Amino acid sequence: MPSRRRARQRALQILFLWDARRQPVEDVINAYYDALYSEEKLERDEFVADLVRGTVEHVADVDAQITKHAEHWRMERMPAVDRNILRLSVYEMGYAGTPAAVAIDEALELARKFSNEESVQFVNGVLDAVHRELAAR
Image 1: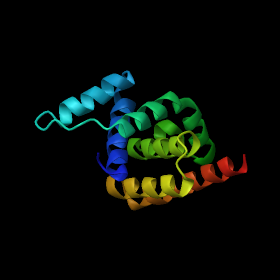
Image 2 (image 1 turned 60 degrees about the horizontal axis):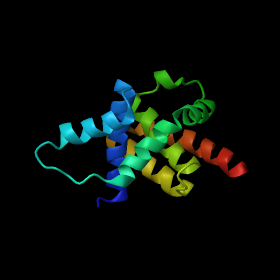
Image 3 (image 1 turned 90 degrees about the horizontal axis):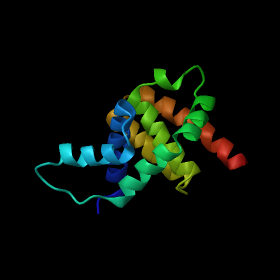
């Protein structure tokens, strides 16, 4: 079983594919494993699949929370990587029971690895605002 950090990286990559293709989530998960790991068949990680399925299932509510706290940014104008990092983290905080500190820290690590320093600051600001709203409920 891969580390949770590696699982989140895979989940982000699958969400990125889903966002670009808008195919059924199971098709995207299968395409990810079939295309990227055709030579070395890796065991599928249920944590990855649960993160992706849950995020896609709740994408309308997750996107609404992000839009509410991403001042002056529409979802479609955000870089796709940042948009999907935010989706994954908001899903984890709001629906998967992941502690906010963990979800935010993991999101910032994803932004550092797959985006840029401006994105790290943007992701941090949006997630902090979402966390404060969730904590106030």
